[in-house]
Amino acid sequence: MERQKHFLPQDFPALKNDSFLRAAQGQKTHYVPVWCMRQAGRYLPEFQETRAGQDFFLTCRTPEICCELTLQPLRRFPLDAAIIFSDILVIPQALGMEVTMVPGKGPLFPEPLKEVEDLLRLRKKVDVNVELGYVFSAITLTRHRLEGSVPLIGFSGAPWTLMTYMIEGSGSSTMSKAKRWLYQHVDASHRLLRLLTDVIVDYMVGQVKAGAQALQVFESHAGCLGPAQFAEFSLPYLREISRKVKEQLKNESLEPVPMIVFAKDGHYALEDLSRSDYDVVGLDWTISPLTAREQTGNRVALQGNMDPCALYAPKERIGEIVKKMIEEFGTQGYIANLGHGLYPDIDPEHVGAFVEAVHKHSRNLKEQTWTGHLENSL
Ligand code: 1CP
Image (cartoon, rainbow, N blue to C red; front, side, top):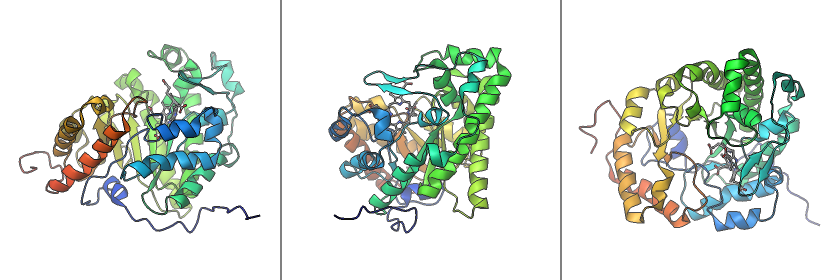
């Protein structure tokens, strides 16, 4: 019988396409790199087929399948980065909470946190190698299977976003249960956010050790916080994550990796985010490229931000929207992406048209760093 090949986090194949990493670090690129949030997802028939009938979190715990799902979009489109297939809710699981994924509905916590005493149910200390080692194995395997074609992005949910799921128990439009804690249980909220931050730091460092070449932090529920609550309950923890991850990598003599922060609907915080030790700030579609550049200056690269619904438009129209987006962001210090994840009913051919349009239009434009005015950009 053929011996099972074991993949170790070493001797990774040399990287052939570094445009995403270069743009993330503010270095010159010959075209605008592009990837899509949720590029591995239900809009792909091959994803549906691989996932068919399988429990979602069991899939997340099976490195071979995570690897396959991560590679699927890259076989179809000339994307400039891969993102490991997993989910942000593996962290509440690592803390001891039960989470299931209800097909067609989304995540469900049968016993969400209701009162402060419920915090006692959470593990006080998480050994990420024990609880989340399956994600690290998936990353290492995928990094080998990518054969250096493009870099692999690891990710985590941000503390506030994870706290909302742990208290709401599922998706919510108001987040009122979680926000109640911010007003009624201030200290307990900070205790929970601190616990999550500590796990996230170890988790992200572990992802880099396993082979992740960039990291994205998803603060998907920034929008329900106003500026004051964001400043108190989100920003300090986001800052601590970037600072500590970079510090730990340095202490362990590991190469630093670019870090991306995506605070959905958090445009009120863009300036603060651009001063937070992240290399890239991700943007949703509700902010114009020019306003985003003005608020973030040349401190960070930007990533985003086409409305995913624009992919419902005819292909030629997608091309026009992409062209305008690149003209406004400039071709340098910029990573093209959507303003949020792909929806399941989006036509894969239109995703292809988006990726192709980014490459085509950015190659046609003069290399342009945003300098505070647009006159010489076109
Ligand atoms: O059965 C399925 O296939 C369900 C769909 C699905 C997929 C493909 C879920 C359920 N998660 C994922 C994978 C996933 N989740 C990735 C994979 C990599 C890629 O992007 O290709 C990533 C990065 C995530 C991150 C994630 N999960 C976020 C942050 C990004 C965002 O969308 O804001 C969030 C909020 C989740 C929670 C989650 N997981 C799944 C769903 C449907 C949701 C959202 C639930 C809700 O609040 O309504």
